[in-house]
Amino acid sequence: MSPVDWRFDDVLTAEIRRMDRAQRHKVVLFALRRLQAPLTDISMPEEWGVDPAEVEVLLRQGASRLDGETDNSFQQALDWLSQAPLFGLELDPEIAESFQLEALGGWMMASEAVGEMSEGQTDTIIVLTRELADYLDRCLNDTLTVVAGDEDRERYLANVAVPLRAYGLGYFATRNLEVEGQCHEAIVATTDGTELLNSATGRDLLALCDEYSREMVSVLKAFPSD
Image (tube, rainbow, N blue to C red; front, top):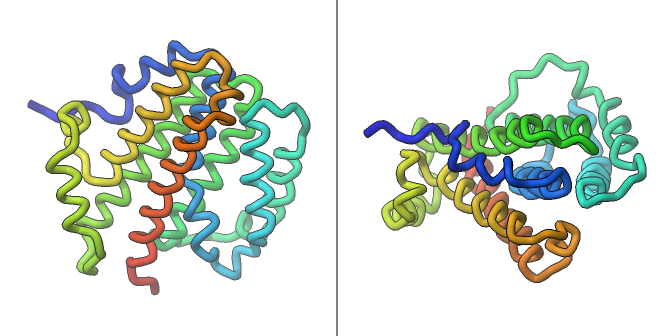
């Protein structure tokens, strides 16, 4: 049997269709949280001219905006960042740099969707996190570098639940889907999304996204750089 389409699978997107706009904002917040560590824990190239403090402001204001705030501080943070030399360069990014660029792109997509956050806009950002996870798995498969944790990742895949195994994915793509599912389940079960983020469940989910994101970084740092 062929693997299930993990990019646009009805099972994975059905819950998004059940959500209201406020809930979809939370979906995007959790998705971008899973891409956060490459922005905060890996230094960007000096020639990009991106101040780490500006990135911190972007992440903080973006999280507040997706949590229902109504001011324009998120857009101001993006406008500030967009003035960096990065956006005028011709880039040939290394693996970790690709993740940083895609994560920044995810926040830019979120800024355009804030207020509307349609099903399609939400799906686009969710699929971005899935594709980056799959890309990291493919990089792991292709590298000759020994990356710590291989046995743990193989053990996880050997014991993961059958529905997740059906997608035929590697460790990071499978783990991302698992964390994504837990976030979506909690969002659907909570009528007040703000209360979710302020609850023990919400804090646990944010910590889970952070744990996943830091694990990605530990692998990204293992790849040799030019």
